[in-house]
Length: 167
Image (cartoon, rainbow, N blue to C red; front, side):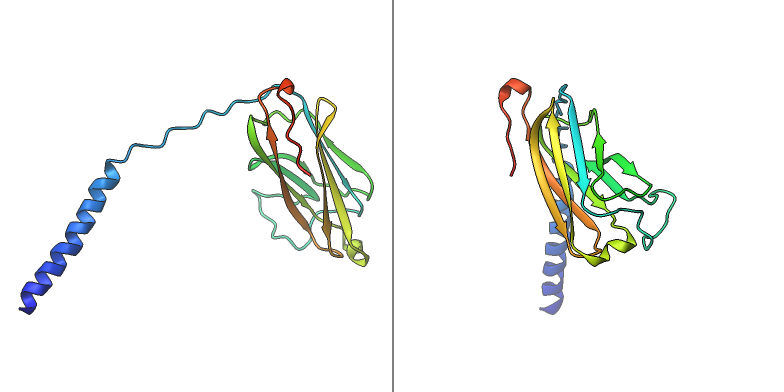
């Protein structure tokens, strides 16, 4: 009886695995989504309340150099500031050309200077389309901590379509 039970269990497991492997091969590949780029002019303005400098405690690699401010759009780097920046100075990223119709996500990484540990700080991110403000976000940090924050904005096909503001 035991050998018969072992054969039934073995056939069930191997048969199930065989069916799964065949079913996986028959699945149609997922079609690539069509991404429609936008032609409007976008500008991102980032202002900090504290001095920034490259992170001295970050692991230094050849593929990811130090930066005091790093901005990514939809996973792609669009701006990197490697030198220090005074508090209150603005960083303006003009002509952002990788925006597309739909939801776009910005990632901001800002490293405060070693002297910024005395008080909490903030960064303000403003996104403009042809001088019209779409997003105005403020991100806060405890004293001396690096800010890594993101925000999303939904873009319509053209400027006459109306803006979707995020507050």
